[in-house]
Image 1 (tube, one colour):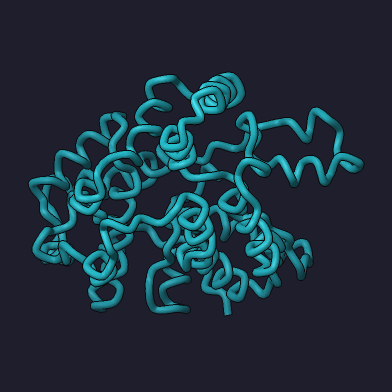
Image 2 (cartoon, one colour):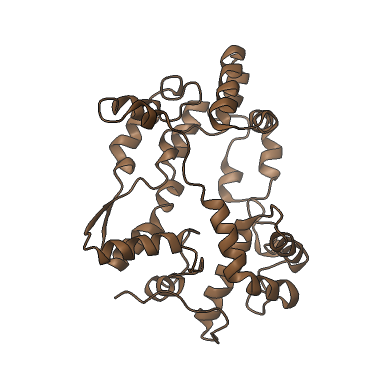
Length: 304
């Protein structure tokens, strides 16, 4: 992966579909599918982001507080600390965040801070129609979260890339029947002692060794993404911080964007997704306007 920019395959995607992918992992997916095509693979089995079906949202801890389940709450916190190494302070913040008044939640901006505020609708139609005094129950809210369109949209870019490379991607965990089945099971049964894939792991007990069934470590994409973004596109970020961008001028509040970029380039824990969005948005606008002058090195073949 190291020789390739996070923009690898981005231009090919734009030329094929006319708009940017709603994902930051386009380079990883592109290289994977190119390798599959070279090896003659026609069908690729993928468990892309299927954790959404098994892992509850942070509201799980908050719901235990609301129901007075103190012993269960302490047991889950201890298990999360022991199994996943999550610090106590973060767990406390997670548990209390969902207990904030609904008015404060609606007041939070959903768009990145650097996005020009004049371009953002402060209140969506959905927010205006939602009855603030009738919050959905935890189980209902979790079912709606899993069944929401955003889960399917997370696969949209992957499906597009599969079509580009002539590979048939299968995502069995997102079968509607399985999603509905899992969403109907109480979390008391499918999430216990920080074991997030309880049902799936036990169902595979006759196929997988105990060490494999119980493992919780997984590939962490964040360190690579940070390194790759700074290494391959650091000069572009520095240019944006120094001179701005004519294409982004109507959309970006540079008083907020410049400190964000400087912080990210210096290695601090800035909002990396906002940094990526700025680069992707500029790339799209420049190519769409026909003013591309080769500023960012083009990577990735155009796949017929």
